[in-house]
Image 1 (cartoon, rainbow, N blue to C red):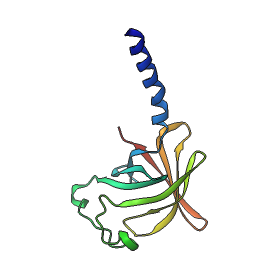
Image 2 (image 1 turned 60 degrees about the vertical axis):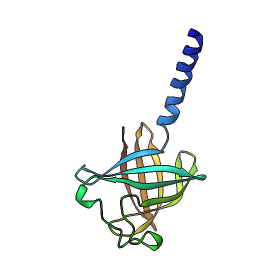
Image 3 (image 1 turned 30 degrees about the vertical axis):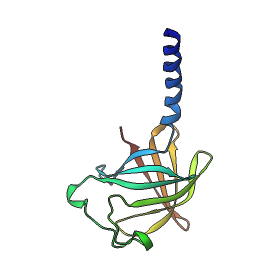
Length: 141
């Protein structure tokens, strides 16, 4: 019985680094001042990666709708909105998807990856033509 317990503990410890290296989960999205604006949940749907606004931190903003968003996202509540769509794994990155900024309604090509030295930091890059902006999201606990 003691050996079985040790095997279970060992297998559990082996699985921890794999989970910590995943882009899946909940991430803090901060503004320029370093305040957390929202929590974004990244999840798998089929064989692609998606992200939605899980929680808006300021209670007075939680009932906002995305009046400027394109297509089927237009006039949808921002809290719960699927802002990141269709990313596919390519090496250590996820590429080929899009991300929408609910404030402006602008849609960008997107790629995400974990910071090499810290898997609790997610790099999120939005592109328009040759121009891009990269933000850092921090894993929630």
